[in-house]
Amino acid sequence: MKTKLYTGIPLFLVILLVCTVVPPGAAENQTLAPINMSQPYVYEIRDLSNPITESEIIDLRSNLISKQNHLFRSTEGDGPTLAYANPRILDNGTIVAYGFYIDPEGTTHQLIGVVNDESCIDDMYEIANQWLENMSNEQNLLSSSDVQDGWDCFSQDDLYYEAEPYGLVENNYELYRNIEEDDPDQDCYAVKQFFSMEPGFHRWREDNWSKWISESGFCWNDWSYAPNSLSSSLHNRQPFGTYVGPTTLQLSLYPEPCMSWSLILDSVSIEDNSDPVTQTARWDMSFNSAEAQKTIQGWRVGSSILADVPNVAGEYHLTRLYVDGKFVDPTSPWYDRQYRDLRTAWDFWVDY
Image: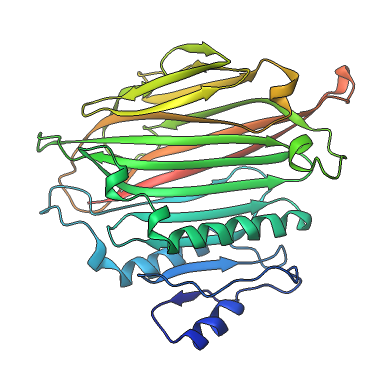
């Protein structure tokens, strides 16, 4: 099944092209309405018999980027022009949904949908369709008015991993560059990462059969991952320290102008285990009540770095954004406790 590169073409043809990406066996009520977009985009859904590979994703994205270079940022040769990330599925998940779009401001948007079983596919199609609708609605995109003054949003990606009966994990992020940094030899980047866990007990509660609940989770921003990377130094991270919920944190990520947001902690503890020596920002989450283990919990964390501006144009690795959601079957015997980790990562690159 080949991906369609959608452009401004007649409506009857759009309908024909969109319908061709529905894989055999998809639910009858799963529809893909024609989408009006200001720019071409990639949108692909598959099933387990014909999954989307990570190498395919790179090819599909590269093909669209080559046709959309007029949207790249003009930095007069001393800054990044484009940013994008490659997904890493670290368990036995299968990619069945993919979307990529460069909005009129040059910000890249990506969707990755991962499942472990045929029973999860309809849920992932619904998530993918909602993402595509959001891309078509400029009010739902992260516009320049939503971004803190002094920062430029380069990329905004969403990765969902659903595994029945365990649960659903999100690994979403926004990447920013500080445009007020006036050192010609240095760039400042910041990431705001959203990590959430929905246990099977909650996700399939209507069927009342999944006993799996959330056990723990962690996420980290590794700014030193690849050899072909910018020489980065961890500048700041938020939250800083250890906090025990329920509480609400008011966070500010530096350098100035600082980015600020609130983090609501339910009956959850968050512990900062970052290591500036290894240029990694890491947070560990633990659950303080049975009720919190059975419900959706999410955390928005962030970190910033200073990086050397490269002397040679090319593609440079920036960071790896990793999450691990651990679920547990509380009815399993203590001597043979059953756990399941859902782990995903983004490998992030910038073009200079």
